[in-house]
Amino acid sequence: MISEKIPFALIDAAARLIDAAEHIVITTHMSPDGDAMGSSHALMHWLQNKGKKAVVVLPNAAPDFLMWMPGADRALLFDKQPVEAEKALAQAGLIICTDFNEPKRNGALGDLLLASQAPKIVIDHHLLAPDSTIDFAEVVMRYPESPSASELVYRVIAQIEKTALPELSIETATCIYTGMMTDTGNFSFNSNFPEMYEIIAHLVDLGVDKDDIYNRVNNAWTADRIKLVGYCLYEKMRIFPASHTALIFLSSKELYKFNFRSGDAEGIVNMPLQIKDIYYSVFMREDKVADWEKEKAGGADKKIKISMRSQGDRPVNIFCHEVFHGGGHKNASGGEHFGSLTEAVKLFLDNYEKYFSKE
Image (cartoon, rainbow, N blue to C red; front, side, top):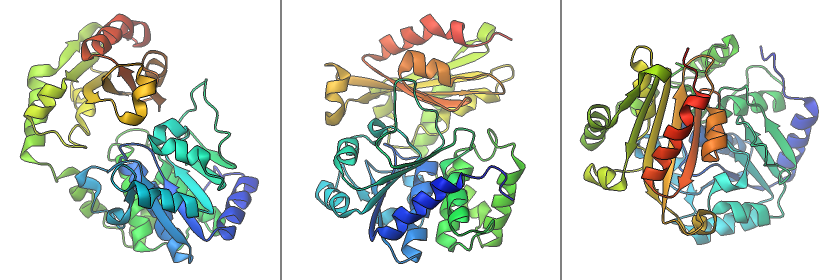
């Protein structure tokens, strides 16, 4: 079933580290999305079912529309529970990092991650920035061709269990499916792989209610979030027809007007791609610089979070990396700019034509 197998040496090394550890911490990136939550919590449930004392430690909270996921309410939030989170890391005999490959993506937890003497495993599907290394981990399973970290977790479990169709608890299966669904835009991009649907079929056979998961993730919006989307599309969207590009940008003042909460901007960047002949979409929003970012921010008190999406064979990850110090998948990437929203928009306007195809 699984044609792209992770090398046995990596699976064997990971299995030995898991067997040797009693306390295991699973962590993921800042502002965890569906794949981050799905991959980390799936591992937590699987490890607990093997008798391990496993806990998820998050840099900060996930959006409300993901908090129904099994075990999400038990995750330790470093920004809210620093003492408990640090204790968990201090006790860890193993740390597993899912859906990220650079400690800086782990936010304020990154320094603790690097300081820990516990062995580490990385399970990730993002490109590695040219100026980065992942030598902080003993075992690295990084496959950018994989549609999601959650699918990689399924494959790791299957190979450790030595079966193509592993027996998973409904909690584990639900988390894996949620991560796979959300990181492919409900299977609308980066999802043209037959084996993905073999995995989905197995998860549904195990009892996953895919319709319920879709409803919980996509039909749980607040009225404020609906109004924010309307404002973005009617008032803020700029179209550049020659480059088949759309741009939306929001200040913190505008976000405040709509009682913005974490997760409210999720999916907005995808919407302009529904317009005929729009192949690139860019979304920017103003945010505060966190305490742990101040040195990196170089004195700036604002940062701009940038998301990009594209269609077909039109990459956005190179632009994100070279202009906004980020990266990601070919069709779904992100970056950031420490400074004003005006500066970030100007950076985009000065550079996008060099990267975005006019065909």
